Length: 303
Ligand code: NAI
Image 1: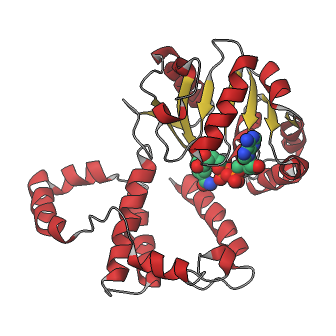
Image 2: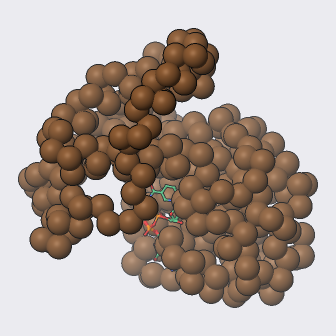
C-alpha cells in the first residue's frame, strides 16, 4: 500500500496524517521543530477523539502515524510526499530542494499551500512535473473538500493520481484547470472578507453584525445551493442587474485595509492577542474550535 510522508507536522500536517491513516495508509511525519514531533501523538489523539473515531478503531489509526527524525529518512520511505510546512515561499523552496535528491524521479509531491502559486512553489525543483497542489481544508479529517491544481509544468498523470486517491478517501475532490493563487475556496472566502472589512471601514455596521448576517443567511444557503446554481435559479438577468447596481460600490482594494491596519498597529491581532475585530477572553479560542467542529459534523449529518 502507498506509504505517505508528510513534511510539517503542524495544524494541517497532523490533520492530513489523521485523514490518511483513517483510510488505512501508513504515514510518516517529519518536522524541523522537535517540539512539533514530540507533541504529534497527543494532537493525533485529540483529533481522533474530536473526529468521533470509534475508540476500537482509534488505536489502529494512531498506530499508522509515526514520526521520522530526518527529511532524508522520510524521503527514503515515502511513495507520496505531502509538503505542509509554513506558508512561506522560501521555506517551501528550501524543503523541496532538500527533498528531491532523496526521492525517486517519479515520486509525486503534493503541496498543501493555501495561496501560493503552484508554479512558483515548483520553481527550484529538478522535476516540477511531479508537483501537484493538493489543498486540504482545516480540519482535514472533517471537511470534505480537497482542491487539486496543476502548476504550469505538472504532468496530467500526477494530477489524475491525486484526484483518484483523494476521491477514494471519500473526500470531495475538485480539479482546477490551472494554477491560480488561493485555489477556488480561499479566493471566494477572501473576496467576502475584503468586502466585510470594507463595510467596517465605511462605518456600516459592527463586526459582530457581519458574522450574524453570514451565519443566519449565506452560511445556511451555501451548504445546499451554491452561488452558481443560485444565480441561475434567480435568473441571470436579475443576477446581472444586481451586479451592475452593486459592483461600483464593492471594495476593489488591493492593499491598505484601514480597519486591519489600525488594529494591527495597536497589537490587536485577534485570538492570540486577546483582542482583534472582536474580544477574545481566555477560553474563547477553545470554545470556537469546538463549536466549529461540532457545527461541521452537524451540517454533514443533516445534509
Ligand atoms: P503550522 O505552522 O501549524 O505548521 C507548519 C509546520 O511546518 C510547523 O510545525 C513547522 O515547525 C514546520 N516547518 C517549518 N519549516 C520547516 C522545515 N524547513 N522543515 C520541516 N518542517 C518545517 O502551519 P499549518 O497551518 O499547518 O500550515 C501548513 C501549510 O498548510 C501552509 O502552507 C498553509 O498555508 C497550509 N494550509 C493551512 C490551513 C489552515 O487552516 N491553517 C488550511 C489549508 C492549508
